[in-house]
Image (cartoon, rainbow, N blue to C red; front, side):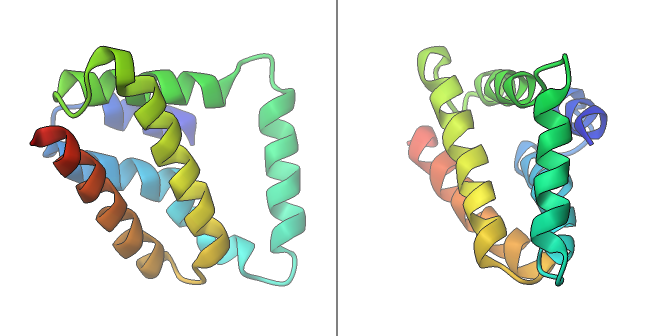
Length: 122
């Protein structure tokens, strides 16, 4: 998952907003269906346990690379980018608990991304 996310963040193939939507689809959108089934909480718990027991600090690396992306596309000044990245990741995780369908997650995550990026663009 993180390899796909990092590859997307490094690519200039898509417009920046579409890249961010794709990143959050990989990060959380794909898990929405899993979490909403009867064993979802158990699967999520095991996945998080594996992620946090890894010698690599993937969540920290993701936040740093997302922050770098936000700076590169001038969505955030360098001194605020890591906080914005943390906020976006936290918002995505919050939506994971709220949404029962991937499409709803993507729709609402897009609203969040556009509002955060718009605030920074003004």
